[in-house]
Image: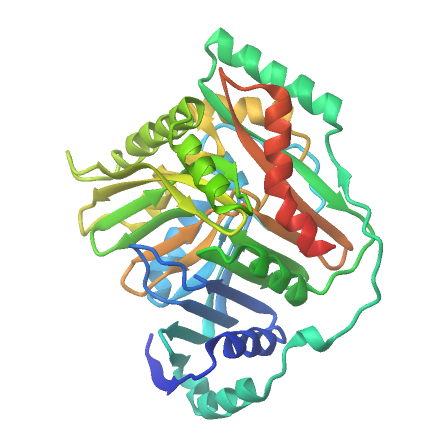
Length: 431
């Protein structure tokens, strides 16, 4: 599929990014991926915006990966979209029967008519031929577009509820620990939902709030009809460039401190925390195992193990696993063998997913799924949907979830505290 490409130089990038997003919000389909200029070894763009579907695929989990494979192969163009956690049911004999207040379709991708890349201070338009005469007009429109923040809304008292009351949460973690002591699993990621009913939020303003608090490398604004994802994810799920694939699971979290010395101490104690390290290493083993199912023999290596990265809200322990694949391997098959990401399930994966389903009260949906894109040549990049707010405009329902990894060394009370630390940014963005 041919696209017309035009470039423009941008002066005030931060202001321009805001204008761009507020311009985009008038379209039905929007995916905005923003790296917030976070310094990282593996990245291609500062930001990408895809709007207005020319073609699309929307499906439940039944044969979802096969359908996506066909759509990606036939389209031979850029496609943007998401995979929900519940696609696990396409891969294993599993179900998702928990409460779902959001109702995101299980899988959704679209081929955008309008595609914009920000590289340094250069903006590149990649438009499909049928609308390429609108590039100049759109560019002028974006320059003029004032930020949506000007919209004032009356302040509402948001009543944020816990889907699982604290006492019940502590009991559930004890049950999870019993599974671990019995040898059913080594580790499981256990999540809880926080939600607000009968409310209206301004999605763009809320996204700005959340992004300002965290400035993460995998921020995402997604709009699909009346459903919104506002994400400040720090985590990459999986990326393919040529024949190289990398996955970067996060396991291990410490809070930030105002004081420099104390902050440095928190980093060093995270680096040397045997519980956090063992959590991370278990997931690294799981990812290596997953990737070895599609990788060339002997090519799976660990580039970085348990390296601590600092973000505005938290310190995180991240590992980077690399592998080589044959040029003939279908990109969707690569994603499929590693899905859902180990950092959000636990190990062994299948047992962990079964136990999670029993103990959690909310269907995960897009939470702990992934958003990203496929390039025309089959390269791709996907994040992990954590630290995110979800909004169903029609149902007036707002939700965010937080989880932690339960291992043999876990203390229920501390796991509850970790969820609250992770939920803090979302709470603050909404308030």
